Length: 251
Length: 208
Image 1 (spheres, rainbow over the protein chains, first blue to last red):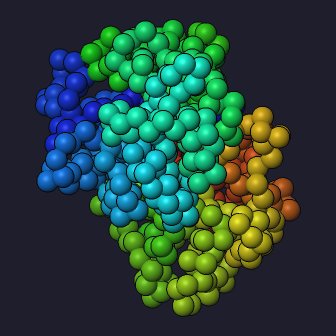
Image 2 (spheres, each protein chain N blue to C red; image 1 turned 90 degrees about the vertical axis):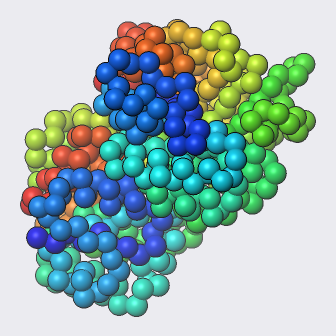
Image 3 (spheres, rainbow over the protein chains, first blue to last red; image 1 turned 135 degrees about the vertical axis):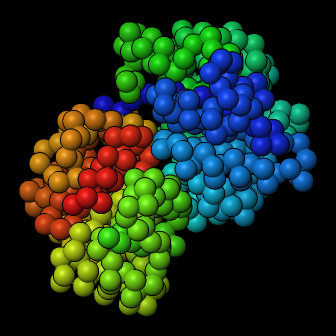
């Protein structure tokens, strides 16, 4: 039986982790390679890096991080943030990323999704959707949530599926950082409209939220950052909890 | 010993390279090349493959003499070869992704889209699934039945002779996920991304 995945996400800025794991035994709390290794050794099903480097001059630091991590971690590695072109994707994959997540560029220039999916296969193209609720529907935001495009999230999700996305990483901007749980309505609506896997993101504060994302939101995978970073829960604890609730996980 | 990963522009092979180098640990020489002479003189070959069946077959054919060299290596000389993902699928006679495309024809059968039962199952089949070992394959030495492996694919290999099947996995149907025919091995899952247990499979192949 296919297992639901737990994906810890690390924010990387200028090659260093921000909001890192709060563990005492870390040699270097800012080293993404060391933190990714802790997660993969702890049973993470995938690792996600989000590059939040603000300036283009420092963009190359992520390639170095990906290269080093992929030599130590033998679970899938997804990298997102600032991915704008097929060239960017090629570079990340060559450095050892297994998947690339595309956000703003997928909205502004869907050809990037079409072309990269044709070139590398749908399996390595994740489209990251930032959605905010407006009345009864949700709209797509870009540029790290700063720009409202007014595009309907369901229509866009279907369009990305048709364009060759292998997965959708859906973040509720209303919930992100709030720790009150995923936007279950949003996840389940998208999941019921597309035939590709949906990864739920944004708002996890406790382990029941992970359960809800899968059971009620029909997500194939759940992504979380802060509950793991600050040592509130380990990936292992999360998996054991999901297992106790009848959710199939890899243990 | 030389283990060669065939580099034929089949998409992203860096994880395959990293995992083999990790396992080889300087005791075995891991070469990554499309050089036909190096391939011929190698002891073992790894045939990776990502993206579509058609694109991978086209990429093989785009390198002059490569298919003949592979045939000589695996069929005439019967040296060990491991196909991963589309690398395994290309063992088939024919594939139906994008359009009907001829495969290498090493293991009789076809590659067709996984039946998602009218949308009941998501495709690609992405994530960790358990393998059901149905045949004692050399690459499964010290691998427990029902171990988890990482999968990502929408098409499946359906061999005519079921005796080549060494493992299956349960998704929308029972999917063939590993084959062994004499010196030819293949996994639909990605051992290079399947954590320590996947590295053990790579180790088993290197130590054949």
